[in-house]
Image (cartoon, rainbow, N blue to C red; front, side, top):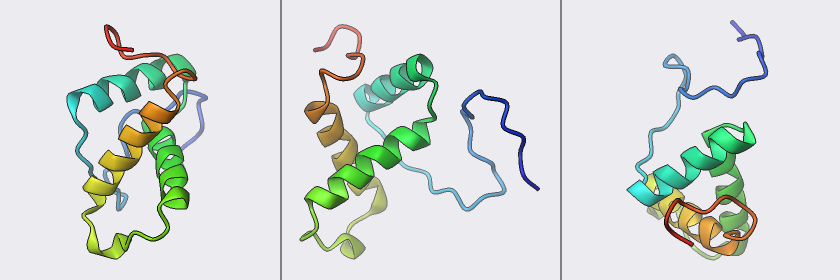
Amino acid sequence: MRKENTGQPTEEPDPSSDAMQIELNPIQFHWITQQYEFLGVTKQELIADALEEWVCRNRSIPLHRINASAIVYWALDDFMRRHRNEFLPVSGKN
């Protein structure tokens, strides 16, 4: 069954999907939550953008040997640093 698009981003993934769970540190979680609330895009879209950029920049790393959560952690950390002037800063941090 397909969910109707209400125009609002979905916070929680569909539990019936094969979604992978990842761990973020508190700063990453706070940053991504701020962007989600302000921009109206899903957290998954933000993470996908970070991953896409990071994978393109790190093609020589054998990704099949690395834990997926570690890759997301590195990609998001790099994305936050490289694009810090394009997004809302984490409250109290610049």
